[in-house]
Picture: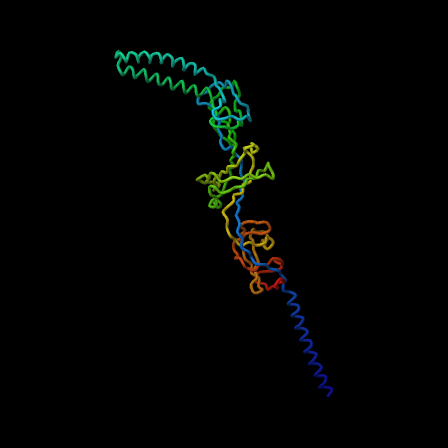
Length: 347
């Protein structure tokens, strides 16, 4: 009897130990399952923005000079002064004009004399035509020399630079100022209201740029201030070395505070689109790479999905590679791996 009791007691003990072991294993298994919180991917409408760096230029620029060399007699405006279209800017020496006018007067008298003789029939048409041709050529020469002794403003603007001073002899030498006009001149005239901002766009982004797209310009030298404009011109060819092309934007500058040469940030506002949007903190970037991932949860199992960032919108990011409505991990992404079972705390 005692032996039977001992056997029964030993069996009960084994059963108890086995049950305890199972409970401990189950508890330990539950402890190893990561606890995460999730949200659903939203779909939002937004305006994508492409950002570039650029430089401010004058809307119009011209180096004013003459086609003939000559001594600079008078420059009527200083640097920084405004001029109107048609204003006399520079006068050059008129020795050539005086000589041309004297020759012209002599030829004019000959032409008047042969004209009278022609009316009387005293000379042939050939002789008349010969003198008339000389007279016409002399008249054209006087007009040409006159234009090259007086330089007028072709458009309204500001005298940005005097490249010569009074008393110097003007020749056809280019004004070598990197980034600006390389043409020969005595003064540099610029129209800076409005101003032009130029920036380069690579071939990948060029497909999104269209004439008329709204643009926001920020200047490095004027923090906190923005200028509204539109894409005006897109150069119809790409550089064979940089694979990019030049794009121009016009911005208002009525108070002349924007100066040519300023550094600019250009935000091009693209047409409205719809996209999946996720919180910024839900994105996991693989260390040492530029690859972004999001962890989804399907049947309590983690799946790692690669995504592409399209646009940052405050604390959220528009992404490509995942669908709206997908359940993704918001908190606890650093404790999970692809294929791991998890427990969702917010269900």
